Structure formats: C-alpha cells, structure tokens
Length: 606
Image (cartoon, rainbow, N blue to C red; front, side, top):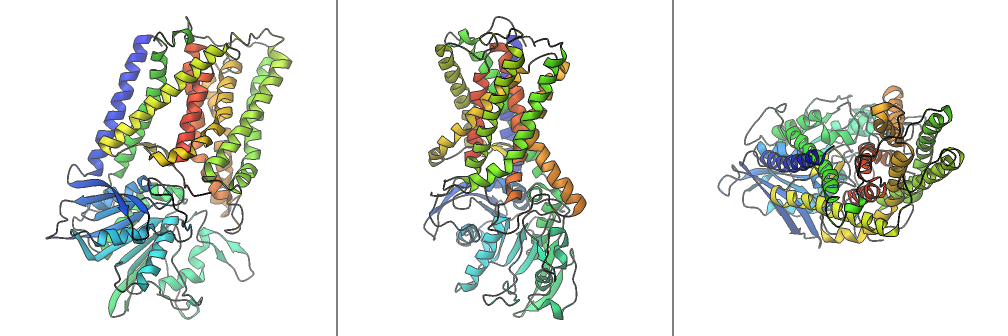
C-alpha cells in the first residue's frame, strides 16, 4: 500500500470514529429528546458510584415519570446495559444505569459482596430524590450479578420504613424463593415481578431431581422454586403447574400484581445483546407502569448504537496501523522503515510446508489444552483483578510455548535453509529495539486518546458485544502491571506469523490462515462447549457449585479473544510488511489487550 493510500486510510479511520460518536450520541439521546448525564454519586453506603442518567423531555417536576435503575453483571460495566437505557429512555422512563462498586468507574471498596452488591438500592435512593421521578413507580432490573443486586435491594427495601421499589425484573438469574427460615414465600409482596431466564443459561436455572442429580437451565421450568415463584410464594406441591410467557395475577396486600417468566432460547451473555430479551424488558415495564411514550416492543434502535460502536472499533483499529505506518516517515522513526514492502518467503519443499502446519496446529492444541487449568490457577491467586491475571498467565505460557516451537523449527529447518535472523527482524540492534518500543507506546497513547475524546464529547466508546475499548479513571492504572503478562504472547505470535509463517503457503490467504489458527483456542473451546449444550442439554464444562471452578465463566472470556487474537495477527502483518520488524505490532497489541483486560472487569482490594 502506497503512502498516499495509508494517509487516506488514516483519514477514513478518523471519520469512522467521529461518525461512530455522533450517531451513538444521537441514538442515546433519542435525537435530542433525552438528556444524558454522567453522574458520580456519593452513596448512602459510603462509596462513590458512577452512573449514566437519562432524562426524557416528558419527565419534569410537574409531570414526573417512572424511573428504572439498571445494572450490569459481574466483570462488566454500565455501558453493557445500553439496550435497556436506550429503549427505556426513548419510551419516556427516567433511567439510571449504574456501575456496581468495584466495576467500571465506581469506587473500589473493601466491602464488595458478589452475591448481594449494594449498587441497585443505592441507585433507587438516588432516583427517589430526583424531582422529575414518580416515586410511586420506581423499577429495577439487572443482568446476572445485577439481579443478585436487585434481590438484595428488595430485601433492603422490605426492611426500610418506606418501600421505594414497585417492580423488579430479574434478568439471567433467579428470583428469591424462600424467606429467612427457608420456607417458600413471596418476598416481593405486591410488587410486579418478572424473570428473563435464558433457556441455555450457563450459571443459573439449575434444579435438583428427586434422585439428587442436577439438571441445567433447559429444565428450569420444572423446578419447585420456579413453580413457587409463579404461584406467589406458595408451596408448589399444593399448586397448579404454571408456564412461561403467561402473566399470572393475584391480589397481594390489597393490590393486584403479577408474576411472569420469559424464556428466550439463548445463552447467558447474549441476553443483554438480544432484541428478543429487550422486547421482554419493554413489555414488562409497559405492563407494570405504562410507558409515558408507548412504542411497540419490536421497535428497537439500540442495534444502531451498537452497530456504530462497532464502526468506531473498526476505525480505532485502522487508525492504529495507519498512524503507526505514517510515523515511519518522521526523522525519529525512519530507520525502522524498509525501502521495499517485505515479500512472502517461498516454501516449495514438503518439510517446510509440513512445519508450517505442524507449528500452527501444535500451538493451537497446546493453548486449548492448558486454558482451563491455567484459568483455575489464576482465579485462586490473591490479586486485585482475577480475570486479567488468569488470561495474562495463559497468554504468557502460550507465548513461551510458541517460542519453543519456533526455536525447534529454526534448528531443524530454517537454519539449514539459510534463514537470516537479522533479515527477518528477529535480531536487531538495541537502538532499534528502543525505537520500536517508543513507536509502539506512541501508537497506543495517541490511539487511546481517540477513545477519551469520543467519551468526552459523545459519551461513547468503541465496542462490539463484550469486546470494548473504553475510557477509564486514573485509579485503574494501579493494575497496569498486569499488562506485562500479555507481552510475551503478542510479541511471540507476531514473530511467528511474520518471521516464520509469512510465506506462499495459502497464497493471499496466508495471513487469514495464521489468524484463524492462532486464535484457535478462543473459538474451539466455546464451539465444543455450546454444541454440546445445545444438542445434549448439558455443558461440556459445567460448574458444579459456587465453590467449584467456574468453567463457564472462564470460557466466556474467550469470546472477545476470537476477534482480538485474529485482528492482532493481521495488524502485525500490515506493519511487518513495511518494517520487517515484528516487535512494534507485538508490543502495541499487548498493551492494547492489557488495557482492554483491566478496564472491563472487577477490581477489588487484594
């Protein structure tokens, strides 16, 4: 690609990022009809909580509107509830989307309780004090851990002098079935209550049969707790069997209320990215409160926001590589640039072709086999962020294995066939190494500066589903040392993809082949897990209990890695062709992945 085309690519990347922010902002504010604010709430519990507040134009002190507090799940942040806050706000509800304590931009505390985080109730207290909120119509909903927070909020609200919560929608979790003595009970009282329970939920919806065996979420409707919930807390042995998608009504404390269960045939993390699940959220609160601005539940626009978040993500990636290549024309970095584009090596003999496939497949298999054991080990360590340390350790060990494989390939084949380690970029003077590190750092800092600019002006970020590059608060930098765990791996796969495997095998698809096989562990493990789940109604790697290794949670960490590892491999090839230097892209990608890991998780005191 000529320099002029690289400049055009840089301009296109900037346009894509700006377009992303503008469209996302327009969708989040419903074309200016909803005011969006970022709050920092000093909670009654004594910690600072970050939140997005959405105030539709119909919500005023004279005409207060119903309010909904929404919460994300474990290891996520408030931006993950965007389908909820976009759709509910445009229907006229005041929406407060919170970062739970120890997540997102909220304060790291020493009192975080995974099973009953306090964030939702603190959000309820906050909206109850807003003059444009109808305090008789405050609802709550949360995905996964967010539903534990909803159940904790109900318990706190029940004990309060004045009850503030009128409706609760449990999302990918279970309602509370029993009282403090363990007896079936209606702990929700006269509140409207619904449950969105994914048929293929990996964590919740388990039931125990009479013979003591445990069945997963596909069988949840048969459970005694489920039936007790739909019968308003009665002993299920004395009640009729009830079904999903039916609103069951009953008079409780002199008020008519309802219970309902929705059962989308999806997996746990997909439910906050599902139009079907979002239609249930809309329908539930429409029935519970009545929307000030009623819109049919199949009329949804949050997908537009997500689509343009993804456009921004593409622009972000294009910016990194085009900006980095153009920096090679500056006096400081021109020594890193090669005079001609690096051409693929030509491999004609059977041994060379065999080693290409064997080396890629060996790393594929090794990474797949060691992933779960390393994740179990990482999650047992006393650290502030268990998922970054776990995925970082896996990356490091896989990187070391890849280096061993490359050394063996060099000794048995490449050395004998005249590979020049300096010519391919593996060996270089220390001054050049220093310049490579400096260039990578500048690429990361300037590119991430774009993330902060978009966040500041548009309250947006670059993401698709669980893959997100977002702005962060300064305290998150205390976890920056975890980034170093990704260096060995991303440098190693850059060296492997470019110094050893950049050749004529596969023709023009050579880079894609390397990307797919390098990312192999990230897609093969989920593939096995979910093909088994959908066909046999049980997971290949399930969690026996809360104290056992959480294999489903570990596997979910791989979904964004499919894109990340493949993209990192392709990006490294783009830069390598112009530099014959595998380290620039390797360092840049390692830092970016490390920042992604430490900004999208839960942080606790060690």
